[in-house]
Image (cartoon, rainbow, N blue to C red):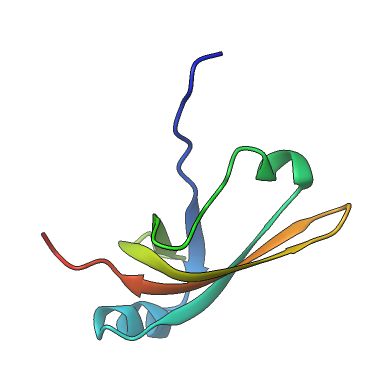
Amino acid sequence: MAHFHLRFIINELTEEEIEALKNDDAIISKMILTPDDYQFFHYRKGDSIEVQTAHGYRLWCCIEDLEIVASHERIILIFTLRQLPAH
């Protein structure tokens, strides 16, 4: 089976959270997945992930910290995010 890259966007961030990221502050966000979906999404500390507001504004972030809470029905990923520096 060939390897492929899936990209997931953390959405529904508030404008205040986006402003905090732009000001180089860290924010905390979460993602809830089924155990089957979790097989495709393996994030680690240091990975990049895209965030989005309800209005479609997007921003790339770095995962500074990650906590994983698992049960039989769902996997909760709790991210500490900071905006990636501009290249």
